Amino acid sequence: MNRTPHSRPESEADDVARAVAGDTAAFERLYRTHVPRILALARRMAGAADADELTQDVFVRAWQKLGSFRGESSLATWLHRMAVNVIIERFRTLGTQRERFIPDGDDALGRLPSPALAGRGWDVGIDLEAAVDRLPPGARSVFVLHDVEGYKHEEIGTLLGVSVGTSKSQLHRARMTLRGHLTQARPVS
Amino acid sequence: MSEHPGDALSAYLDEDLDPAARREVDTHLAACAECRAILDDLRALAGTARAWRDADVAPTTDLWRGIAARIAGAGAPAPAVRVLPWYRRRVSLGIAELAIAATLVAAITGGLWWRRAPLPATTTATVETAAPVLAQVEPMDAPAEGVTTVSFADAQFDAAVADLERVLRQQRDTLNPRTVQVLERNLQIIDDAIREARAALDADPANALLNTHLASARQRKLNLLRRAALITEGV
Image 1 (cartoon, chains in turn purple, red):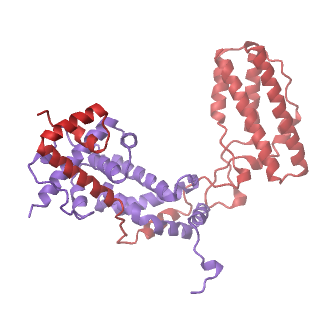
Image 2 (cartoon, helix red, strand yellow):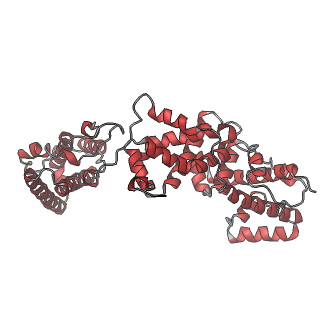
Image 3 (tube, chains in turn green, red):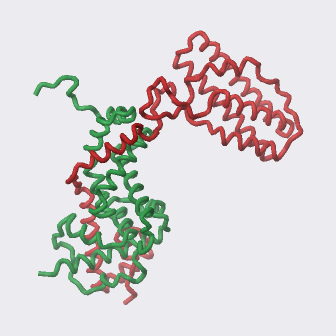
């Protein structure tokens, strides 16, 4: 295929600069590149029902804030951080403070006698997504941010407004609850 | 057999225990098959979670249309900081901060006089011609010529400098004479640099390098005055 200078793919930095100047076509290209990852993050943190709307919120916020993007991190990292903030803000707005976390001592499911799950071939993103959907929002956020997205407990504590100790204990309860859900969902053959 | 480790089992998995606590869990695991099974499960869960991160999701509906409608909004996108050319970039100078510092100093002490000669009367008039160096925030869709400046103007800059100089004049005798000497010498150097830059800009107003140089000198002056004012606050 012949390529003219005009058909040459623009770099992401070019598109950022154009979008900052108000070019929505450039911003759409950025959106197309990054939406799969942001949508996946929204689904993990908030569930499939709210993921589309949250993803739109993230990109609207990105449009508004793109002028503050200095290129000190990758755009993907910048968008990811923004998405986490937008999603957590939504939790707060929706008043999901109640029953956010798993009460102390409620890891009985994890104590059910069961054979180890290890090596049983979970379907990534299917079994786990269904199990995560059953977690309270706060515990879900801790689990997703720590175990999936790789955040530190200190960062999670700051984002969620909880102590590091709470983040650690909720992570353990979330893991144990997930283990219980996954064990029940997958009877041993 | 010791008690089940509870939360410490996750911390063990994450290698987030101190050596003594880790040894305790090791001892327990050696004797507890149930906890070993749980640990295996948690390890498998962690591996699955990490893999989940790479499972991107393609939209099943066209989300862009909704985004496009929202960013188009009612005709004007939300304001954002415009990325200015390098020679026009300026860091906010914290006028409110300066004003607070000056007010605090004035409130705490007073009645003394700093005998430094006032700046030449031509200073303010000349500064007002050096607008391009200021930081600006403008609507993203605004034409470049129609920039709406919402940051401080030169007159405000000069007012802040004048306030701080007034405070320092009042507090001069409360400062160590050596400090005053160093301060005056540095202010003189900066004033000379500002004066030279302005003179050069009179001849070449569009020179980006000169604009940057002037901006830098004025920033240094404000910073120095601010630090000096804060020193007097602590007297």
